[in-house]
Length: 137
Image (cartoon, rainbow, N blue to C red; front, top):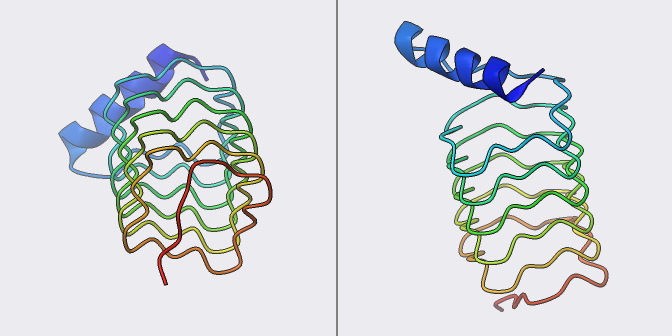
């Protein structure tokens, strides 16, 4: 799926009053920086090395996505569903993960510098060698 296809699906979904449906799409390496993907359904999508810097993914369903090495700097992921997501080596610096569901997410070697993890559920998440985060409690 090309960037243009993604943008068309998002526009169509908004016009029709529904969530953009990008389930299992190959978006690896795609530049979606700064785009509004709020509430999109991206379950099981391939987001390896995708550029989502500064994108709005508020409330999006990213369950089971393969997001290794993705650029998610300053991305709004508040309230997003990231259960079972592979975010190994992803750059989440400055990302807003407020209230995000990260149950069983793979965050190995992820950069979480300055990320807001307030209220995020990290139960079972693998934070091995992840950098820049503080857990309260």
